Figure (cartoon, one colour):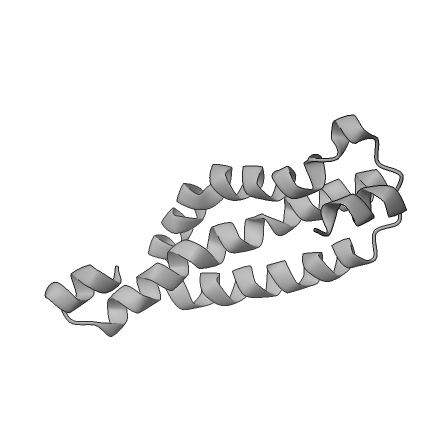
Length: 107
């Protein structure tokens, strides 16, 4: 597992050791519906690409974290990316299939 080595390297206390992993999930879950609405309003392709780019940038920033606050912040901000590209990706897959049983299975 990566989390014990990260907490040791950044001197994160045991009480706060789960924040680098949970901050990502928390932000993703809170903003999934919001970005699904944005994908409906502005189109799935642009939201998908912006979400992927956002994830790459903040994952790189998080990889160079120097302390606990920077790690937790970058992981939380990185959660906006998947919140954007997951519903947009489902929208793009849904547009690729015509209505019917196959589309119901995919989406």
